Image (tube, rainbow, N blue to C red; front, side, top):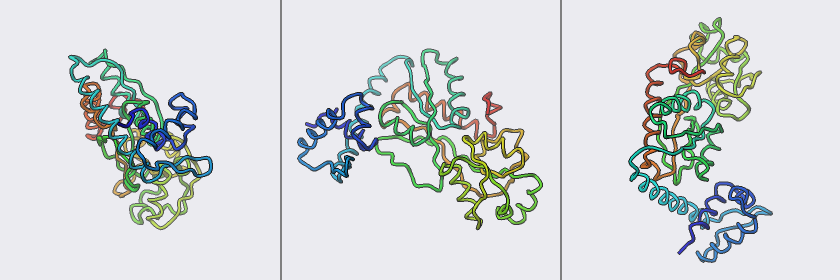
Length: 310
């Protein structure tokens, strides 16, 4: 019978990419990790690993076993959830990792609502990228990830995870008011010679802007790069540059800069948990609360009307 702890190390290696990273994550030595992985290889009777210089990679057999290891760990999560269901009340703590806009849009309203309705349930939030949040979730560092996924990118690998879509957020164009008529007449190509503000290079917002502009036949002249859609909106408000941003990141005071009627794609915001954890009363309550908050946002209430600073 395969050892659960060794299978956990294999799943870690698949996610983290190196023995050193696995050792740091589990707070053990690299030699101990390597030894346990060799034992696992002997137990399976298959070649699970291949060396590429100093890097230890997974063979096809190793990748197959890592995927099954995630399912086994998910079954353990499900067993824990079943035990948790026997509790007669919601209590304890839940750790959530979320991308930048997930904080004012979802995490803060969640904490505000639960603090009054469920005082025995504590929510801990940390900010990270969507990719990093999923990695933390797989490594059991957090209990839930709030992620965004751009519709022009392929799906994230979700083996062993359960994704609950909360809302689809369309992208909108913020442009200087004197350009609106030209844009309505000629489309996005009217801004081919104008300046743009977007996110850091190769970030989701940077790719979104480049994708939209290239579809209109030009490459954007990016003069400003900022972290966070809210900051991009504020710079666009000076009307020195145009921007493509998620609709819910635009505060009410800047809605006059939006050029309506453009199909620019969007992103899906989701809550992700390890498969089997949905039955945990704490997780189930948070998922229901997040969905209610997202539904309110979709009905047209801005983050300001939800009592959250944008």
